[in-house]
Image (cartoon, rainbow, N blue to C red):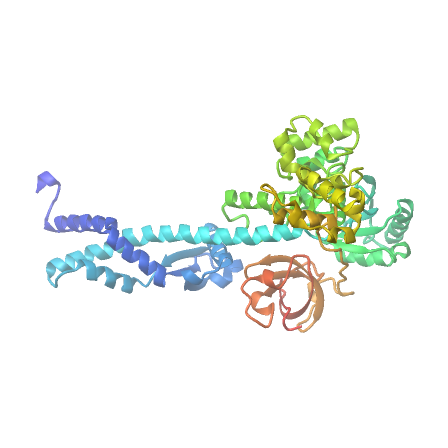
Length: 565
């Protein structure tokens, strides 16, 4: 009727169907049916966006792709969603529509007449227009969360391994940030990582410049008693390495390629400007390369972990989730290694449990004003260092030159009295107990248990007495790339090369073989068995033998295999 705003019976029927569609979409049982079908047979379907085929070349694996939602791996989900966000892919999550409609009809359609036809029409409209998009949104969120959690886990594991990479230790280092046209920035660092000298050389700009560069490096090696040479692995890295190896004064020195990912981010950061206000970014970058060789952990904590160059799709995941995971990883790594309080930067100190940026700065300021700390007790004199904070951080701070032996170790001050009692019971001094393994073996831990101190704590104390203050990180090892292969064009299928694992993902690992383009070892090529997690087989910065099994020069892709070696 005109009063209801309905012009004819067809409009009335359409209105009735619309009302039914809304009711169906809000029916909890029907929503449950659709949800179950998404779980059972839902597919992730990706196609090229209309008119975008030419621009979508980097997503060519996903231009006509479908797979079950339950089997889609994290990296593929994030890659496809990134392509959709860039407008290059059209993505849909959907179960088999015929099966869904059949199951919905069983619950809704009760007869076979004209009325049932209209109800069927309303049900189909409800599914396509309301139910399917609504449940798809739910599953998109769930799929993204699952992919984010896995990507964050992989990234956090990579960052942890990178932070705990083997340090060369305190050496006089000559570090080079290589370049062709702009030259190579050279810096000389002392054993504490302080900058002593910097200049630019041009070894790749002609014979005359190369001779001059050679003379300069020889002079710096002798003048600063250089013990190791660090070369960034970026542009001109392999060429600079080959040049340095020909220099007579460098032949007996370790010449090490250093991963420079994130060095440029550090060199332009506020931290770098504060450390080196009078030097430009190229000098800061070279210093970062040299310090990374000496102590990767101390240097990498100055850089946003997302810029370190490991992980997968870290910029696409939930950033709050990522940041929380990274903070825990950094703090865990720093606490595991321990921090020398008299040489640590405020960035490194701020990662110690219980300390933050303000208290770390107070420690550094107190150190500058009053000289090095001679004991852990002196830390209590630092402004804002309360008893509770001291309890939290003291066990992770070391004083290498301390007179009291336990101040050099990871034994917490709360446990000093226990160790002193052990020494007294054995009739020896504390220094003798720390240095004598035979004495340590005579200790009966059961004698020292109490309501507050259990056997696990006592075992940790004994382990630390066995290796007081020793760095838990692995011993540094030299890795040499194949000579004469500096470019991807020089590779050939079948070659066996030495490489370094630079990144680990859920689908395999990337390996640097010295050609400025990392190759991929797919998870199926890691071992002659099923591998669920690549971390079972490889670790970051590990040296591995790999075989080249495929090359795609146009797309700059190298396929490698470990198991075929």
